[in-house]
Length: 253
Ligand SMILES: Cc1cc2nc3c(=O)[nH]c(=O)nc-3n(C[C@H](O)[C@H](O)[C@H](O)COP(=O)(O)OP(=O)(O)OC[C@H]3O[C@@H](n4cnc5c(N)ncnc54)[C@H](O)[C@@H]3O)c2cc1C
Image (tube, rainbow, N blue to C red; front, side):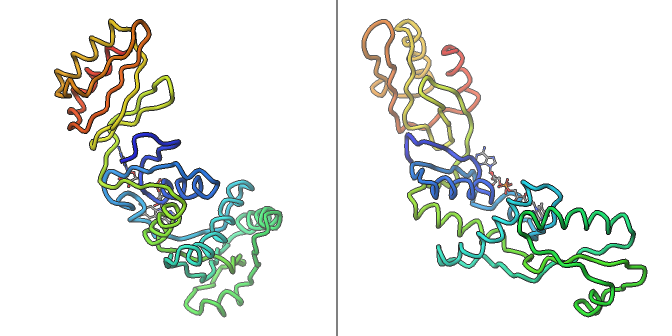
């Protein structure tokens, strides 16, 4: 496991892995993701994977449009099928208010560049013969809409991220996050390989004794210099139970 990295993403669902992928794509290859179980073991596993382009917000609409276009290129890039089926999407309107909303939305869609068609009830019936069009005023259709396989998408994103140098640690739980003078220390149940604390010599000795009590070998704890010093702990030891780790942290604060 890497001991230092520019960014640690916590959680290997589609959002976390996509974040990792996009950081790597922007040129940050020194990034890592930590997932407590397997990738997609959270909500992503349960998602239907529908990609509704319909959105009244200009900015969220841009994100949807980006995502749908991106999914088309991801398979080509990674060689992994993401299960993207473009089947279009029809939204029905059975009253005038709903139709007004669709007209307002069409303005947003046009600005973003998302294709949206207005359909009469007869056209809906042609496309979808099983639809009961009684009382229907009309509908809109997004021809480019569809659905994706969320787990396959996540794995493809993971491949793309790894290909750009990102690292993924599965079956590794984050059990604590704390700020250090250089950034953040992310603690996992597999161990944090290196800590660098700046402490006074007095406090360093207190922490050193605590760490020994917690089972870290004395040889692995080095106090360097006098006054303002670096307490440099490098260890492959088993990380103490989270309840004990709180005791480890408190004297530092
Ligand atoms: C039934 C259902 C249907 C859905 N249908 C759709 C749909 O059709 N279209 C759509 O766009 N969205 C849909 N969603 C929503 C979609 O699933 C979520 O928005 C999306 O999966 C969220 O992804 P995520 O990466 O944020 O979270 P998650 O997939 O939940 O990922 C979080 C990950 O973090 C890990 N984790 C948690 N704590 C730690 C820790 N301490 N250390 C390390 N790892 C940790 C978890 O194990 C998990 O893998 C649906 C959701 C459900 C439940």
